[in-house]
Image: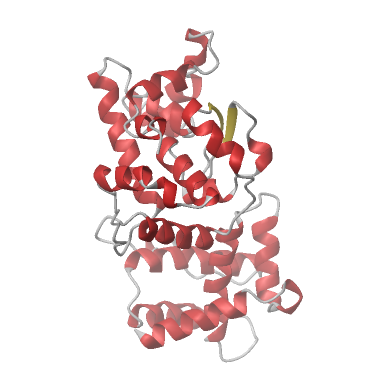
Length: 309
């Protein structure tokens, strides 16, 4: 375990060097990830860490052989990484090979396949309520991101992208990652002072993870391994999805609220993907924020923000 951490830190330090000092192969990788479609900063860093780790194991500077690629995955598995992580690194190294025109020796069926589903860590609603109720102990930035995470269904990457220009006094625009859509939300009355008090800027995702830990500590929640912003997203999604049919509302409304890509919404319509593409619930309501008002009416955590603390 200690050896693995040492290797990881070494690779991270190497990957984070200024672009001018990057290994030429990593420079090519950055170029590949930056054009024509720009990857998120955290995604690029993740690819660079894997790339630096792979290059560290090469014996010379020549193009890697098929054995070099195989030995890398053997080494990583011996170091104890999970099959899920190995699968991720498989695609990272493939992209590195493509960026440098190295022959890629593997087929689709060579991709590492984890037998178990990735483990998720949803937070119990009571813990999220505890955080919100203790918001007076938080800084303006911590309170802002907690409000965003517990009101809107967002990923950590979405939160890292938020800038002041993304909201005014009443409307908040979320640029969803993972092929999601740009969605404009009505800022609830209770959250408007919180939005007005903080001027956000782009954050590194790891900085937001550290912030989550600070929020847990300040609000008296004992942080557990695996917990993070994504746990709030899981819990909020589950709670709203359960509340909609109970209130005779269409379950698929959560897909619109979440900003999921329209093609991925097909799962809500019997697997018919094109229904998601052609679906536009806004034509049924002249209120541009009608969907938000519906979701807010059944929202599990928004009432807690309305109470003064």
